[in-house]
Structures are given as structure tokens and as C-alpha cells.
Length: 178
Image (cartoon, rainbow, N blue to C red; front, side, top):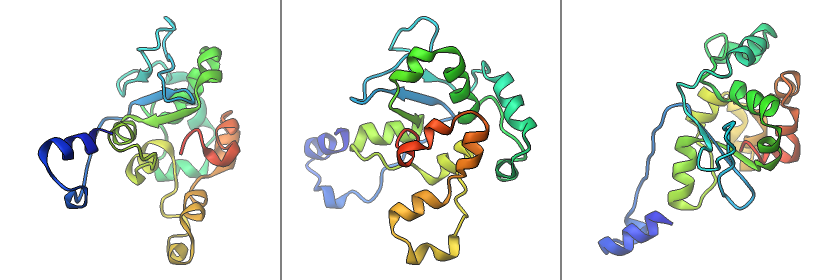
């Protein structure tokens, strides 16, 4: 990974690295099982595997998600915008079925960059809460008694994902979305 290479080049011991951070706007990355890019473009060009934050192709999908008035929406400002991940994912599912079938992992750009740098697929609480509707506060008082697998599961409202037409993303322990 990039961090190991940078440490080696700089002659820095890995244990001396105390943090690594990435920030990015609400952009969605699609990759296959090998981590290779999957197109999210009508062109089918795999180099175009990111829907950037300002892409508003998912306006209709955002409107339909908001019309459901799911309780989840109260934790993301009362509704989703087309810049957020759920509407973008729904747009890909409805419009690019081949890409939808090929994609094995959907990630926020900042999480993708961290993964590429470290090889660790852990998702950021900031991105999952703010952009994916993960309920980071769910069971907060119980987290000390839960192991990490339980903590990952307790914040995803699977009913929400099923109601908006993306229930397949929560199958298999939410492996496609983290």
C-alpha cells in the first residue's frame, strides 16, 4: 500500500505513524470483486467509476426517497439530496444494470482513498452517517458490550434500504456498502 511505501522511502517505522486522513466530497466509487473500476457512465468506460458530488443525475431518485418520509431521514437534515449515496446507487441500479451487477463494492471517495492507501476496508463513521444514512448513534450506550461486528450492524436501517429499492445492498452482511 502507499503508506508502507512512503514509510519505507522516508525511513519511518510504521509504528511511528499515528494517523492518516483523507477528505473528499460526497462522491461514489464503484469497483468489482478485484477492486477494479466499474463504470457508472453511459459510456461504459471503466475509468469513469466515480459519480462526483455535484452530479445531479439522481434528482428523481432523491425525490422518491424523500417522499417515503422514512424516520432515517431525520438524521440527515430531513431528506437526502441527489449528491448523497442512496439516490446515486438507486440511479445506477435503475439505469446501468450491467454496472450494477458487476459492482461488488460501493464506497465513498474518502473511504476509497483510505482503502487504496492502507489496504483496510474500514469505512469512516463520518461518511457512513452523513452520506449513507448510517445511524451512528444507534445503541450508543451499549457499544462497550458489543464487538465490532455488532457495532457495524446496529446502525444500518435495513427496512429503509429495502423500502427504497436497494435491499440487495444489505444482503450478505452489507458487504457491498460497508
